[in-house]
Image 1 (tube, each protein chain N blue to C red):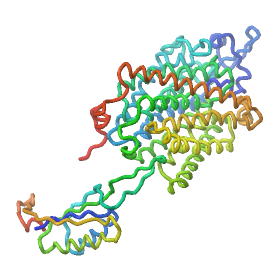
Image 2 (image 1 turned 90 degrees about the horizontal axis):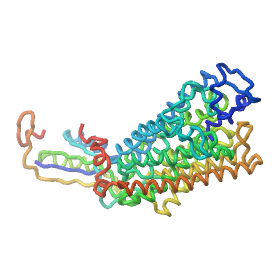
Image 3 (image 1 turned 45 degrees about the horizontal axis):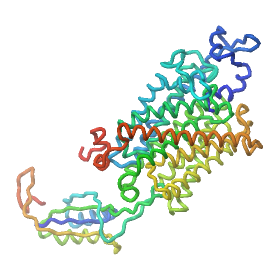
Image 4 (image 1 turned 120 degrees about the vertical axis):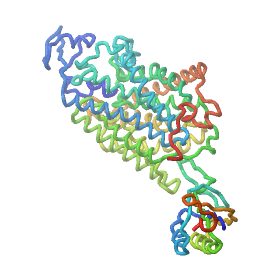
Amino acid sequence: MKYIIGVIQPDRLDEVLKRLTDEEVHLVTVSSVLGRGRQKGIAQVYRSHKEQGSLLKKVKLEIAVNEAFVEKTIRAISGGAHSGQIGDGKIFVMDMQECIRIRTGERGGDAIG
Amino acid sequence: MMACGNRCILRPDRMGVTRLVAGGLAILAIVSGGARAAEQGGEVVVQATVDSGDTAWVLISSALVMLMTPALAFFYGGLVRRKNMLSVLMQCLMILCLISLQWVVFGYSLAFGPDRGGWIGSLGWAFLRGVGMTPNADYAATVPHQVFMMFQMMFAVITPALIIGAFAERMKFSALCVFTLLWATFVYDPVAHWVWGVGGFMRQWGALDFAGGTVVHITAGMTALAAALVLGRRQGYPEGISPPHNLPLAVLGAGLLWFGWFGFNAGSALGSGGLAGSAFMCTHIAAATAGVTWALLDWYKHKKPTTLGMITGMVGGLVSITPAAGFVTPVGAICIGVGAGVIPWFSVTYIKAALGYDDTLDAFGVHGVGGIWGAIATGIFATKSVNPAGADGLLYGNPVLFWIQVKAAAVTIVYAFVVGFVLLKLVDALMKLRVGEHEERVGLDLTMHREAAYTVID
């Protein structure tokens, strides 16, 4: 079991979700987050006062999958979020020790799907 | 002069038959009823009679101006950081309640009561003694005196609330309450008397202030500058300050301010006739012009027109047309609107940045600078063709009015800055104006009011 975190540009979310559905990865948690990387922030102007924001808006996806779906998930996220520009985001893949479905008490791979 | 006194001056049709007998109040005692003229010691006296149309409009206008203080709360509230949202709303609401009481107890009497040497009203009308349902012809001959008093109360309320913009996010709430009461008593009430009160010295000069450009905006704006200097910058200013936390709320506030301003300016005609209509029209024209002007300047300098710039321009236009609303033509209103976009824009873009003071929400930059422009512009664009009871300005061949306007503005600028500065220092010595460093970091909502404006979880 793997736990996959993707941090992407907010405007790519719809495309990534569509590709995840195409790969039959339906379960996903989405949050709106702030972050920074190599991409420089966009200056905002308030009554002529420039704000050089160091944090940018991003969208974070969290997906728990069984081994068979790891590459499919990576393919969906990286394919949907790719534009070739700085700031496209990153994908982190972690080993997951346990998964429990609260309603039934099922554990492990069965609980994921 | 505003509206008020100037009802007499602004409405010559009625002024023609209204002569004040020694002391003015005598009028009320002399005649029994109806608009009946009587010879009295060689003077013609007319009983003031309530006009239902005029009274309805001033009642509605009073409610419109009342709404401006909550509107200002949201305009300012949207521009501060999340952690200080409630503190700004609370400051506005507390001022609304406190000054309403102060006005009833002695404020109205100081501003409009029987004159003492041209400087201040006496305490003769304290607790509204003698302020009843009969009109006072000195101020509004066709509107119950109590209604005129209520209309003026709303002006007295919003003026100190404007100053919040300069010290937002760092003023101690208790200090704000004490300062506000002192400021209303020692700055607003006297200046209102000078300009609008019968016997007030600026009124005697012939200075024009239709709805409060000098009394409201210059006084608040200059004290705002004093407050920014006395309190000092916020921690982290200018680099470490987050942007406005909710611009849509600020837009809502600005929209409601514009709406309320129709009561502020057109209501200052103190009657529902042609003059009210003309002031209503000029108010709208100037706000629209200044909004467009500011947006264009942002577009030119920063490549994009900004929402905050647009609403700031709108408010600047409303500020600048305030003293002129009942004296200028539509073209005059456009010219004032252009100035109201350009001059405050330069003020907040270059002057504030160069001088480095932290006028948090530009109370000085918009209300002070816009108010000064409005007072001077009235001396340029006023014309008797709009209001025979007014005067001709520079553009109509009368430099005298221009100099009177400059002089009245200059006196008010110095008085409001100096007295505002002294009162701030006094309150600081008594109880400290500014919250502690920790309280400022955590935010005033939690530390001053034990509340949060927004929850994270439902």
